[in-house]
Structures are given as structure tokens and as C-alpha cells.
Amino acid sequence: MYILAIDSATPVAGLALLNDQKVIREEFINFKKTHSETLMPGVDRVLHDCEMKAADLDAIAVTVGPGSFTGLRIGLATAKGLSMACGKPLLGISTLDVLAHNIVFSNNLVCPLLDARKQEVYTAFFAAEGDVPKRLTQDMACSPQDMAERAKDLASATGKSHITLLGDGFYPYEEYFREYFKEDLLVAPAPLMLPRAAALGSLAWHRAKNNDFDDTFSLRPVYVRLSEAEYKLGKGAL
Image 1 (cartoon, one colour):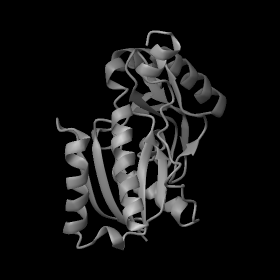
Image 2 (spheres, one colour):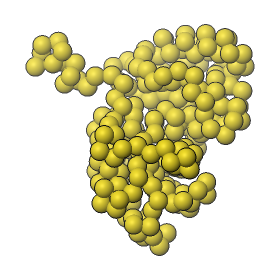
Image 3 (cartoon, helix red, strand yellow):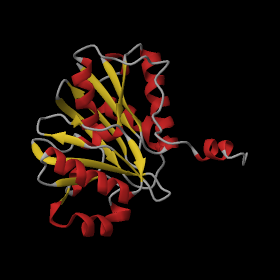
Image 4 (cartoon, rainbow, N blue to C red):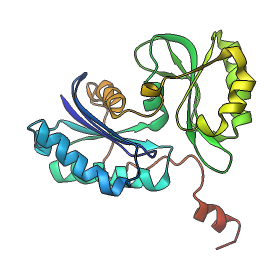
């Protein structure tokens, strides 16, 4: 089963082509250019270099959030366009699940973090004893302080020996996290710190083998919190 994975939920633009659980090609771009500039040329390059056409795919996977509102819309529009043009099923996967999938066979509490701006992070908590993440909470947007307190309480309640942090939401608050967690903290190494399209494709494959696809027309981004425009509208500022 050939799956094309498309990730643009964060500043990283990620693309991967998998055949079942075998990664054939992966691209990871975290430098300057916008997703609107990189995604479609990247899709074309990945397929061309692997001697494939979009029609040869069996499914398309995409991160649906949380993350950058604009990035999510670009990625989902790209994936939906390919899905409808080629008649291929679509799989939408949480960005936090994708990040958590970087950590496997671990007894730590895994806490992926995305920078949500406004002194907040997007996060959820996972167990990673197996080869795929097991979700312990729903996605949330909260302050780094709130996240840290919840993580410590959940680690204690579930008997987790350490807390693993990863994602771009770690960097703005690194000093605080290191001081708060002290020796209980483990930080993912650089190759595992950010979302990987190969991890997205792997999670999508687990769903696709059970025919657990999303409806292409109704699939929507998962923003977790209101956009700035929606917030202002609710406050009567618009």
C-alpha cells in the first residue's frame, strides 16, 4: 500500500512516500520558504524521483492540527486536491500524534509541544511503551506552567519514571521546563524533536489497513482554540 504523507502544520514542511511500513523517500524542510512555495513542488519531486504518479498511490495522509492555522489550511487543501483529483482516500492525523510517534518503546510520559504563541503551547500526553503512541488525554492549548503541572501529576499517577518533551513548543520555555522538571526531564534529540512525515505515514498505514479513512469533503483542520479573528468577533471587536 503506497501512502503519500503531507505535513505543513508547523514551520516544517514534510513529505514522505511509504509502501506499507517501508519509508521510500522523505523530505524535511525547515528553512525560510513558505508551505505554499514548497509543498506542491515537493510532492512532484517525491513522486517523480520514485518513478510514480499520483494515480499510483493508494491513500494520502495529512496532519490536521493543531498547529499553524495557515499551514494547516495549505496542507489540507493540497491533500484534498490530490485526493479528489485522483480518487484516492484521505487520512487526517493529529499533529501531536505524529510528534509523539517519534518516541517508541519508552516508559516515559511523552509530551509533544507545539508553539501556540500568546504564551501558550498545544499539547497532549501519551504513553509510548509500544511502537505507536497511546493517547492519554485530548489535545489542549494551555500555558507552559499548566502543562508542566498536569504532566507531573499524570506521570506520578501512571508510574512514569521520566517526562519526555519534544516539539517546537519546548524551545521558547526551555529554561522554565528544565528548572521545573529537573532530573525528571528528558529532551528528545534533534532528529526526533520535530514532526516527521514518515511518522505521519506510519500512523496513517495503521488506519488504512483497517479501511479507517476520512471523508475527503468533511475533513476539517483541528485548531483547538479560536483564531484571532474569531476571538475578536466574539469580543465584539470586529
